[in-house]
Image (cartoon, rainbow, N blue to C red; front, side, top):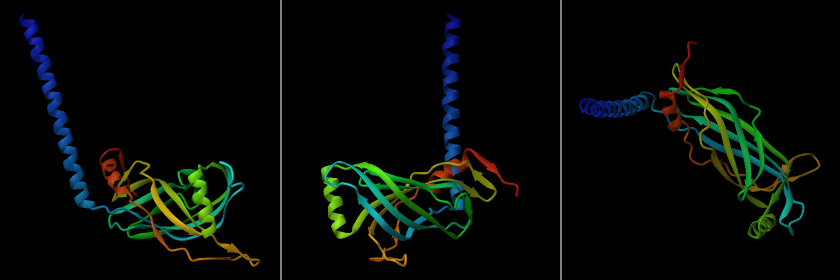
Length: 229
């Protein structure tokens, strides 16, 4: 009987201490995140498409659902780091072109890898050019034909960076934050014999919400490394 009672007491005691230390570790983690945030006060990066030219965007046959899309889109994107105490290492930035919900292109910027320091604005360029088979439904084809008549297309470009954040001498591991959504209204340009594009002027467009530093603070408390240089 005593052995049974002792065993039950031991199990309860072990469970209690595991629960206690788990709660304590969680509280300490939250406190560390708050202190980390107060020290560095990170602000999110700002992605803005400052210039864009759409030289080609046409389908081989708009009467069928299975079409080949020919496209030629160039984008200049500014990345603003407003932080005083945080920098960013960019290992890669991908641009993913979507029309409706159909992906038609994925390219990497030729600028990476690079480091972006404090209070810095960096320009990167993407060129999406080629052809891709896309399957458009009836409503999507109707929308495409309408936009072709207007010579202005609604194209969604998502930016997918792979980065790590630097806080002083602390660097996070590389991670992939949620994609940055840039919903663009792009006028079709016309090319003349001298090689210049003309058409309606593209209006600079700030991309959607960014959650890079929000995520990196938690990562910084976890898998980080110290920089000696």
